[in-house]
Length: 233
Image (cartoon, rainbow, N blue to C red):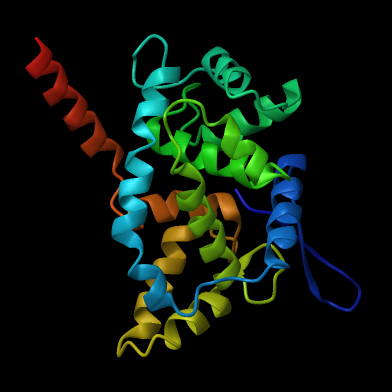
């Protein structure tokens, strides 16, 4: 899920994006990093978890709007319709890359959790977020602050602004929180993010881990849907 490692003659490690999409995400993160971050500590991030959780759950309405056959996932055609309805100008190959990047279990469908990550990536990749905000026409006026908080958090953790979060950066961020068991917490959090175990975490990996940190659970969402369906029956 992350970049590949190459070694130059000086034996310095260089992280190379695996795909054009990942390269664009790194560029967008670095561009955003030039504006700085409002996050002051890892504790300040944790305090925002409940508010972020509410914001992400509010994405359910837009997910259900675009899940045209109501089967619990968004297929490639539905995603194209979604991008079109949001009036976002993405090329065909960009839509294909987004779909492939977010379809983690490769079942040719974007689940709710994957859709949250996809929307946040779309938010990041747009140069003019104020213009994008006008396009959220599905009754979701509070999407931008939630996604901006996620981007802001990643920028805070990415101390050297290279577009990735390293293990050392994660340990340093949590060490500064003053927790007695900060080292163990940092390692656990990093392992949760580093899906491909390459020692570096990109923005997409961070987003998938963050949805779990704040309490978004795919199985929980499915149970809620079943309860809703029972009540309607």
